[in-house]
Image 1: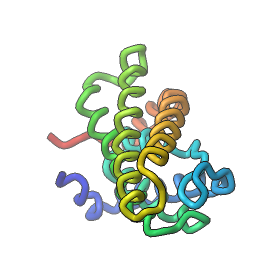
Image 2 (image 1 turned 90 degrees about the horizontal axis):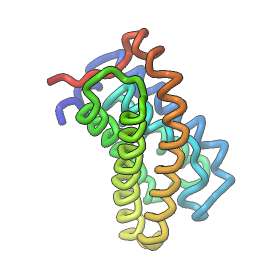
Image 3 (image 1 turned 120 degrees about the horizontal axis):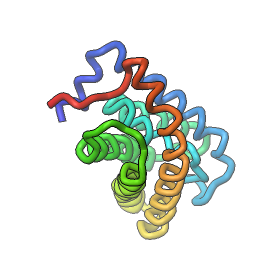
Image 4 (image 1 turned 30 degrees about the horizontal axis):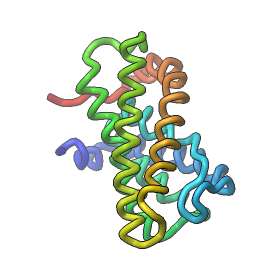
Length: 186
């Protein structure tokens, strides 16, 4: 849990937070007009970012995902529900990070086993995000839990799984060579 807050004391991690937020918001905003639940959620291919960047960059990506989602909400879906979107997207990325680094100890080669783990992690992280956002939005009376949960869960799972498998194969070794790859401490 300490890793969540320690990123704020490291300039390089703050840069990763800012870049993640900018990339995520920049990918979310163009799809705002394609709303699934008006005023709450839209088609989101950008949902690959929290899972992929969570695995690559760790807790800094979780903060960046939360901030990026909030920034994007200013372009058409800002409401009290955005607070739950902030928390949900943080844990969307952080859950992926923690599960990946718990389950994958060997070199990342994205073989059949690691691809299966990536998909399961995408599904689990999507579930966590969908629970948080849907529960909060229902408490606020903005949308029924069951409807929003289903849409968020499917949207997140499909986008992060399908696009993530492709992008991790392309990006992992490059990020590793830059020295920016997250490695958990102890």
